[in-house]
Length: 444
Image (tube, rainbow, N blue to C red; front, side, top):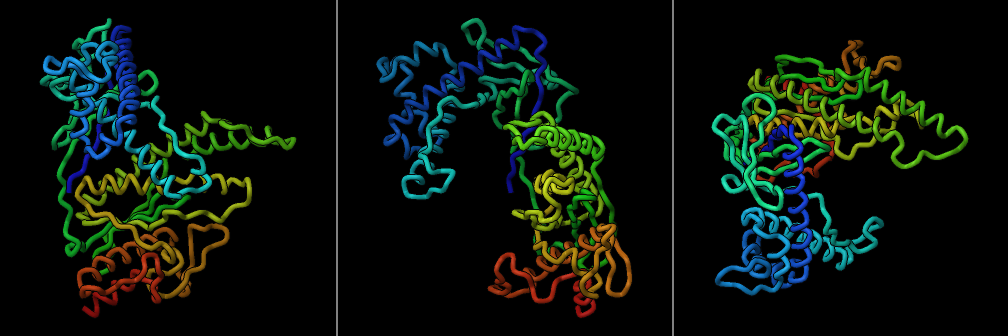
């Protein structure tokens, strides 16, 4: 399969001249996209059936005069965007056409009656969008030989010129594959190049999956992992936790204190309350998701795992915790979906299969098949089996998650065509646990 990953390379903009040139390039590109959206929307009955690349020629026939075509429908573009680079203009046409096509799709859906409370009003075509220019290699963008700097065609003093920019950090490493056209982006005052690279990844066959790394995502322990083979043998296990707990708890305590003071007399929290602190929490969770997912992928590679299995918690909503309690706030800030998304993207890039299994019963059932477990009331991370054995709850769940993943691959391999058509999400009569793999290995 082919995947596309994007690497962001920061540009050094030490001089005011460089910053002004980049800002002028972005401003004139967005202005062109805005004007092109009006033209494309006006002629949409004729331009709508055209694909992405086919729409460039008819739009240029409307706005771009040439020697063979001196008169065009909209001469404004030739005066307003004089000497605009042709490759950058074609990128702007594709950008504008994509936004108009998105609006037309949403508007047709609204006209057909597909509406809810959020879409009661018809959608609007917003022409002032925060798009970024795409730089075609060789025409608008060039790397040097050692990747220490690059050249970008920018708008400078009313003209389009080539300007050199140094790249931050060491010589940039690009993954193997085909480099696509980068995009010139800005966040705050930091300019960078977002370079997509298309690579080909070969995933192992589903019939060859005999060893998996299972992950149980928790709120107390960020990730509990275990390496299990097809016979049910545990090869390794471990616990990964967030390294920013103290900082996160301080920020959350600061938010709770400010909220309690603000609502003491019955007032409601205003929109954007403590937005900076919430943004910090979001960035911390994003960073931890990337760090923990990278450690899990490295462990899967080290143990030669063919797949990574997680429990499917999409759409899950917590029921624990009283209103305005600390547990309620911790559940609200739980980053389980973000962590799973990072694991999936990194696993596929590393050539490892990813699978999510049904989550109900993974923590409730004992991995040795002795029945339901009883969690400790004082310490929910521990549980007691019916035999009296005490065990870690998250590790017990990781074993059962691995068993369900291996059984799904094994059933797909051994079952005849049309078998196992159980409705997705349905609970089997006998919950699959690690002991199921033991019985299958003995029977086999």
